[in-house]
Image (cartoon, rainbow, N blue to C red; front, top):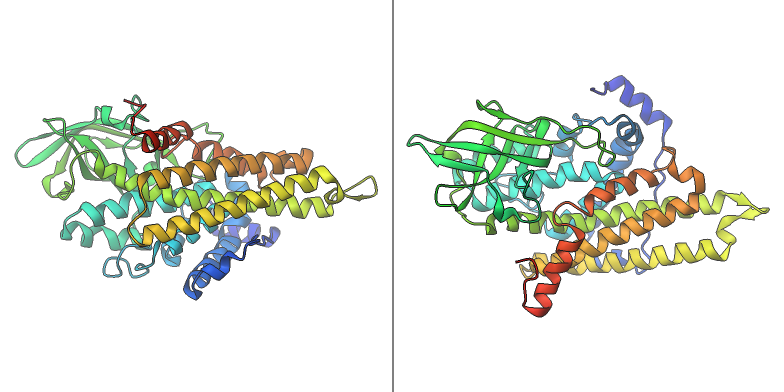
Length: 406
């Protein structure tokens, strides 16, 4: 189903986003003026474009496809890519993180659309692609003319991507690609897919597969209770002839996709913080307005305990994200450090969503408030890009030097 412009404008007149960001430790003082300007611009964009329609999109399981171009216009796609390939690029990782925070404050599915495009499609083409590939694809992905997706997870290989069975053969003039990928954000509408597959020697490489190639299909996954405003699907390859110039030439092995996932997980750490902030702000506002026993429920000790613990966890997560962003800017952030942030912040956000739902009581399960939507979305976020437990094992390996997952 497609949302009409008239319908969108009606929704915008009916709902108003009054979010106010918590900043208990004055984190803004650690940001540059450019960071704050970018953050505020994306916050205004979310309030204007996403918040008025997102509850209806989630309830009806509609992906607002027109948002892809709007994301491109506002510079949300690949902002760390150099300006020669992205006219809105050239930003640092703090700016990128703040953008993901604000977009996921609006909705996790919308942040998934943006971070897949930037971290999992544009980043590998920039980092591992040829100059011709960069110039062909990156400007169109940055502007939103193209939508991209990332093919790594398979029906039988999720946490163990090295076991993938998708493969390609050298046929002289082209590569012949066969296999399937599962749980792929953006895939039903994607114009290009960065697909990871094994060659005849079992070595993993990245291929750029374009929509319309014979034998390539991307069926949508339906009946989701999470990320309902995001499009999710499969990638199916049946004797797909991929031109040889579509092979990413500058990486081989699992390190290629894993480096992409590091960037995506970094963005998720910031994004989950945004979802937590939205739940906290909603719960605080409701508690101050909801009257029981002749006074607002915010006056009760148990409600104050919940709010105080929410603010404490959000503040810790803000400092965690800021420090990790500084390490990313310096090229020092490790996979284990990113895993810690992704694991901690998503778990924190999910806990806050559940506590906020309790503060709202029965109203917390309705579409009048964003709590239940955030909670359902975060159930996916805690699983994708490395499950909660896999990130624990990555940290355990870092601590002990012993890989528990091999």
